[in-house]
Amino acid sequence: MADEQAAKRIAEFIEPLRVTPGSRVTLAKDFDPGYKADFVKKKDGLELLQRGVELMTEFQSRLAAQDTYGLLVVLQALDAAGKDGTIRHVMSGVNPQGVFVHSFKVPSAEEINHDYLWRYARDLPGRGEIGIFNRSHYEEVLVVRVHPENLTRQRLPKAARGRDVWKRRYRDINDWEHHLADNGFKIVKLLLNLSQEEQRIRFLRRIDLPDHNWKFSAADAHERTYWSDYQKAFSEMLTATSTEWAPWYVIPADHKWFARICASAVIANALIEIDPHYPRVSPEARKALEATKVELEAQAPKGAAPDPFAAETAAASAPPDAPQKTGKKARKKAAKAAKKARKAAKAERKERESVEQADRLAGRETEKQTLHEDEREARTADHEAGADGEAAGKGAH
Ligand code: AMP
Ligand code: MG
Image (cartoon, rainbow, N blue to C red; front, side):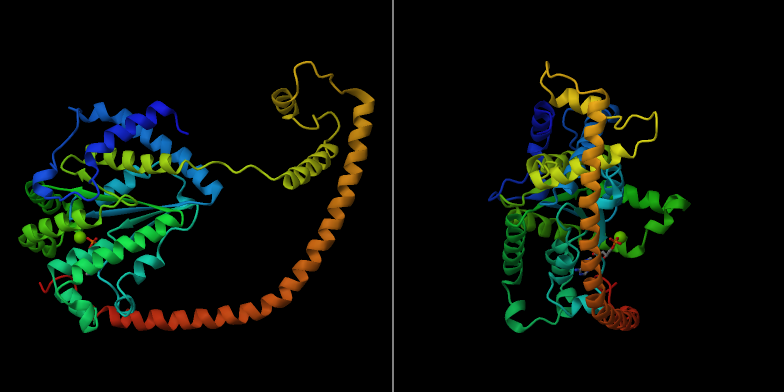
């Protein structure tokens, strides 16, 4: 368990951001984009951000070692709310090997050819991993709802695009997330909540600063005309899909530094709840480790300590008045044990070689199959590159 006090502080800090499952939400009324808790200035919150990042570093490492649970972080927001910056800051302390970010854009021809959850399921994190969805399956009840032409593009059968389509999608999403949670995949859902005025200012900044021009598109500004439609879609989404197994957190996004503290605190809290542990080795594996240790000790050059860590380990495990084994007798014993270990290692090597030989034979078959699959994938990619040009954007604008 993380140090109890820090865990408690984090849980209390994020409580006001949590959407109580079963509650009815009106985003504009219930959540203030300018909220900063008790922090007056950025520097007041830095310690908490630092603590959150440290906790994440430690817990990610344990999550990977335990290899039993995975964590999915879902980030939703309107343009310029700070999704990219949040990802950059929050993940600053984690090992990139165990973290994947997937950004979801307008679906490709291949993606639109499947059921609407297909592409999100394809990019889920595995056990021991943290996956971040920059936009997510929630676009299917947000942009697709605000711009119904996106739904038309999905070529659904009539029964699946009736009046109850959004209700059905909320149900699908809740069921899917419940299934993931039951199978060891915790889901953290963050909505970065930006005010309309702050978005206007951030867009102007993107236009006025040449280095930021690339981030701006006229379509983003046009999308502002759908502001109240999005607020309504957000409110319904929060009401229908904040569940006990995957609750929503509404992150106040008008102050970037505060949004980052909140996001890192919610993610740290999820990892604390998973409480992953480094695995303990089995007695058999322990025995094998001991045999290798003896072998390595016997290889020590003259004058070198057979095991520089021996004193530490012995001090940690031996009873305080245990007699020390030193001198000729101990060395003789070590050499005998080393001989035995070498014999065992030789037998193991032989066994491994024969298994590898069998694998190689089987592998030739698999290799042929993989080549065939690669070829097929390359053909699909070529086909998609052609089809992508035809893919429509969000709304007709
Ligand atoms: P950005 O994240 O700014 O690079 O933009 C990605 C764009 O893809 C946004 O305009 C999203 O609204 C759009 N998008 C993401 N998912 C979907 C979806 N399922 N259907 C239609 N548009 C989407
Ligand atoms: Mg954009």
